[in-house]
Length: 344
Ligand SMILES: Cc1cc2nc3c(=O)[nH]c(=O)nc-3n(C[C@H](O)[C@H](O)[C@H](O)COP(=O)(O)OP(=O)(O)OC[C@H]3O[C@@H](n4cnc5c(N)ncnc54)[C@H](O)[C@@H]3O)c2cc1C
Image (cartoon, rainbow, N blue to C red; front, side, top):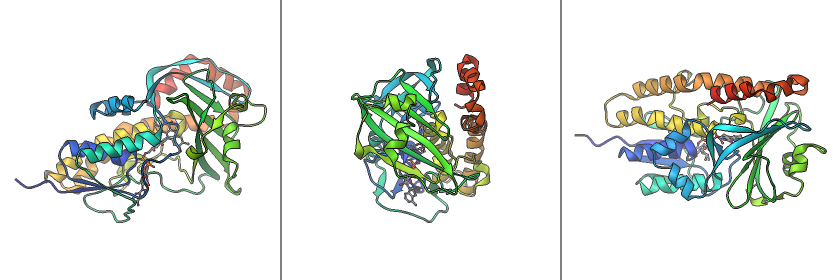
C-alpha cells in the first residue's frame, strides 16, 4: 500500500483551515501556508448562518466554538436610516463568534491533528496537489463602484435583536451580539469608482447624522485594536467549473455579506472538496478528476444561492429601497422567509 500523497493548502483562513482539519481527520498529510498570523481581527459580520453550521458539527467544531464563548442568535431586525421594520425570528439559529478567536481556534485544532502550519509564508505557485484558499480576489472597481468593508468591536451598545441590520443609501451595517457584553459592528460600503476611499472608518460605521444607526451607536465604546478594513471586493458570482484550479471559500466566489453566508460557503466548500482530495491523495483518482468532481459539487450546491444573494444585494442598493415599496417589502413576512431560504 502506498503512503498518501501530501496536500498543500495556500491560505489559512476559514476555508483553508477547515479543509486542513477535514483532511487530517482522514489522515492525509497536509501543509497550510498562511501569509498572515494568528490571532488577528478580520473584516467580517461574525454571524455564521446556514448549512456551514452542519459542517462544523460534523467536524466536531461546533461544540469547540461554544466552548470558546460563541453565542446563538435567534432574532434579526432591519432598519433604514429612519424607519424600523418588524422583528423576525431566524428560521434557524445563527452562531456569533469573533474571528479573532475563531481563526486561532481552527489553526490550533489543525495543528493538534498533526497538520503543518507555516505561518508568515506566502506561496504563489499552484499546481497538482495544491489548493487555493487565498480569500477574495482583488477587484478595485466593479460595475463603476469601489466596494469596501469595515469592522470594529464595541461595548455599551444595546440592541433590539440579536442581529440588527441598518440600510443606508450606499452601505449596510450589521451589528450582532458577541460574548462579554461586546457587539461586532461591520459594514459593507460603496463609493463611485472615481472617488478615493474615505479615511474616517469609525465615523462611517456610526452612520449618518440623524439616523437610527447613529443613535444606536451614540454611546458605543469602540475597541480600536479590533478595527480593520478591506477594499477591492468583488461580489460577482463565480462558477467553479470555469476555474482550472481547485478553489475554496472566497477564492472561489464571494457571496454578498448581507446573507451572513460567506463563512458557511467557506466551511461547506472545504467539506465538499475533502473527499475527492483524499481520493487523489490515496492515488484513487487523478488531480484533474478531483478538480472536476469538486467543481460539480460546488456549482450544484452554490449556484442558485449565489444568484438569489446577488438579487438581494442589488435590491439593497437599488433606488427602489428609497421608495415606499421598500416598506412593503421589508414588512412582508413572505419576503423575509423566501429570501432567507433561497440564500442559504
Ligand atoms: C463586510 C463583510 C462582512 C461579512 N460578514 C459576514 C458574516 O456576517 N457572515 C459570514 O458568514 N460571512 C461574512 N463575510 C464573509 C466572510 O468573512 C468570508 O466569506 C470568509 O472570511 C472567507 O473565508 P476564506 O478562508 O475563504 O478567506 P479568508 O478568511 O480571507 O482567508 C484567506 C487567507 O489566505 C491568506 N493568503 C492569501 N494569499 C496567500 C498566499 N499567496 N500565500 C499564503 N497565504 C495567503 C490570507 O492571509 C488569509 O488569511 C463578510 C465579508 C465582508 C467583506
